[in-house]
Length: 271
Picture 1 (cartoon, rainbow, N blue to C red):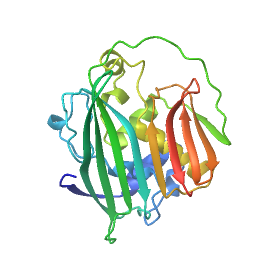
Picture 2 (picture 1 turned 60 degrees about the vertical axis):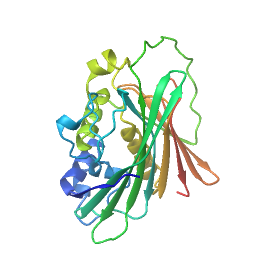
Picture 3 (picture 1 turned 135 degrees about the vertical axis):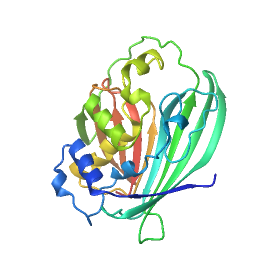
């Protein structure tokens, strides 16, 4: 693990109320001194990356510069978030961000690399981290021509489901609140012409946030840990289904795309 980059921020009420507004919640329901809803800490992970230090795809990194490694495309592969205690709205927060691991692989589709970044958020006056998050990204070579083979629709079966349709506005607001300028989320021409994608890609963090809110608001649950794995992109303005099933050791969650295929899997032990 590399030497961490350390920065200080405030869990500011204004930012929290903007997140509430983005989620169509009453902003005035959130006040200084109240616990920050779990999952909302994403706004504290946006590093102040100079434009000259960004990747060509616009991805700014989160507190530490993302290595290029000669691989121009980047996607979120998964994350693990441990909530050890709540952050408090209005408190000062120290963030320590570092590379935990970089692994290069040669696959049938070309060279790839997996980069794992670890963040620790500590809220004064505590001396130990309140939230520890690991994010793993996959770096890929140039886009290849994508085939147009359509897969048959699949049926979503789950104990609890909720249908949402992230649009351009939601992607923009989430990206702005997290200071994430990755072009696949905000530049439709880039997404289509450079990355070979059919449309803007829904932020992996946004999909995770919507799952966490599904747990918090719809199911009344407070996760102590959430582990996600992204298996396929989700696209802007296409219906996606949040699904949750109670498992022996917690909850199993999924996000299905507009054809019913699983695009994101998540485990929430003991919630």
